[in-house]
Image (cartoon, rainbow, N blue to C red; front, top):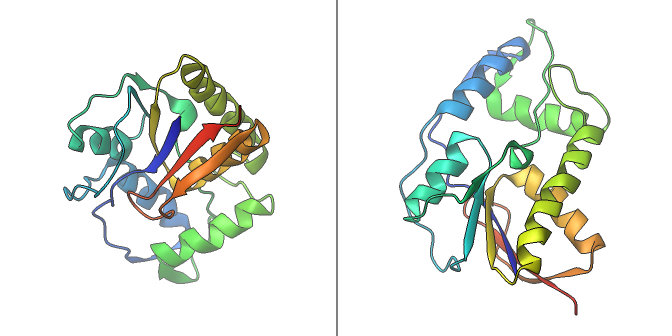
Length: 178
């Protein structure tokens, strides 16, 4: 069984900034603390895997667990941004705009959508390896990367059992179709 979990909520304000300041915002987001509220009903696992990003590592610790594996393959898909200074919007709105642009091939200052999908294949292979050893595997990951990994797992004969949503602490349980 594989459980894909999105990390706890990050404590950060979405300030009004020009697009070029998104790089600074993203770095702060990656370094900021998480809310200390525990999720309800999250299943236990035999092995805990985390991305290398602070919010995932800290979310795993909040569960009272140490990650058995910490691997950058599970890091969130990079968010591109432009070098524009004229228009100012909230960082949250810029993030939505640039994530949509990323899906259509825009990757300024970031990993491309194509390369993120390749990385999702590598990440899924790690999860499958541990699942094949009859271990329940919990990945403490990220919204977009978890979706990319989910797509790979489904193409590899995994089916979705429980899905609680894609928000913070949302999780999806997958089992191999035997």
